[in-house]
Image (cartoon, rainbow, N blue to C red; front, side, top):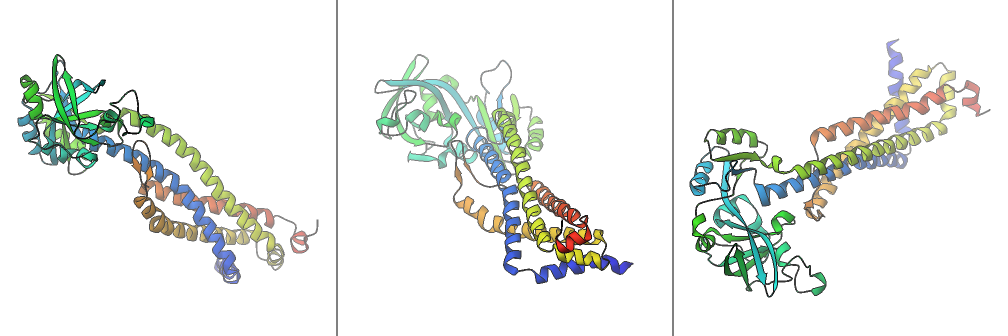
Amino acid sequence: MKSEYKIPFILAWKHIMRANKWTLSLIIFFMSIAFINMIFVPSLFNGIIDGFNQQIINTSTGNIFITPRGGQDTIPDSDNIVSEITKISGVAAASAELLVPGTLNYEGKKGSWTINAINPDDEKMVTNVSQKMIEGSYLDVSDIDQIILGQGIAGTGNDESNFSPFDLQGVKVGDTISVTFGAVSHELTVKGIFRTKFDSTDNNAFITQETFKKINPQYAHEATKIIAKIHTEGEENIVIGRLDALNLPGNIYSWEQASNLMNSVSDSFISINVILSIFGILIAAITVFIVIYIDISTRRQEIGILRAIGIKPYLIQTTYIILSAIYSVAGVMLGTGLFFAIIIPYFNFHPFVLPIADAKLLVAPGDFIARMETLIWVAIIAGLIPAIVITRTKLLQAIWGSK
């Protein structure tokens, strides 16, 4: 009786050994493509979401940000607070920002934007704006009467076809612009233009704290926001707990609490991902079904003979379950190799260029394993169906193909 259970494995082995190697390779290749199809789209969505999250962290909020307490417009004594924050375990750097509304005027073209007064040395340790300069250079701590503009303010260049009525229409490095804070106006020289691809940052301008102190000395050592970068992403709540112990004069938040827009985008991506995943599973199931069905159809007579000599139908069905499992496992292995060895490296060097970020493929281990298991089980079920159908066919009809 025990030897009976060896029959499906023996039949499956002989089936593979006698199969046309090109046909077998093609089957496994189709399975690998089905698997890649199942993991590519979620990896892309993960990459887009992660890219947007990194934009928030690296250009706007840091991992943690602190705002004034209720009823207050600014955080006082910001320099000392930054110094205290950087001493906390887990904090890599911190920067104080004073955001004030200002009107920028260049050759009669003007608009209102946010002007951010910073310590450039602190800021470039927390954000990557200093790495996103497309013209000119970033600010130095000693810079007085100089400003850098986001591309949303500066415009897209000298090509008049690209001009927008909502920017300064091609202001260049070295140009002088007039900046007005309330009733106070001051002339500043454009030192650089940056582009982060994050609109809320690209519609900002940056000046040094020293410049703003010169224009409005009453706001020295104050900040409207303090942002901090931590050593290990994901430990924001742990570091926030340590910051709470300092009893800082402000409200402490993680970057995630600033990304309400991205939460709605993520929900949309999840819905799309579910729909595309269902189609991916259906494609995989249909692929396996067709492969097994064609294989069984060409071996109908052989299956009939096996039944005629006493091989029970469930043993034949088990044989095709084993074959389906082998095809799917081999396909998953090949697909995994192609995905990690070729596809991911390619998109690391050539990311998807999107308006909000450059997206790479990001694989979530749990999701990857779940899809791998799903494909294998779908393949087994899809392979079992035609096997059941053929083993329930009348014996003579299976052998002779009669109706």
